[in-house]
Image (cartoon, rainbow, N blue to C red; front, top):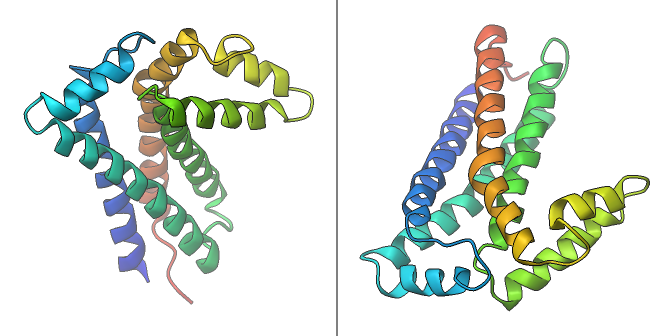
Length: 187
């Protein structure tokens, strides 16, 4: 129903604000260098007051945001709310879903441990397998052929600057279009 869609939107927006807020708190202590990234995570977890809780809230609310985005897109698809005149709402929603996944992907490398390193290696190799532009995407994401300290810096910049700015822009556009066209009524 309309109420369900509205609640999904509110919860998803809240789950964007919550990791954003906790991410700002984490950024005060995080050091995006190969020598200090993992140590800064340990410092946050063990020395900063409520650091482990803030990091856990950041992690779980970000995962919740991904789940809620997917649930929202499934509901919109099932209701047919992507049809005329709401095609651009659907496109902006799909872009927001991709940006949400980009948040998760870029944030995964930041602890700079073995799991993060190898997950980012595999993830960027998958992006590198895209026909025609794959190698360009791989080199752009890694800033070279291997996952290095420069990759860590690039993912950090994408995670805290580029993806949030683009996401806020698309959220505003998406909300303005929903406000202008209204909510699709169930059949």
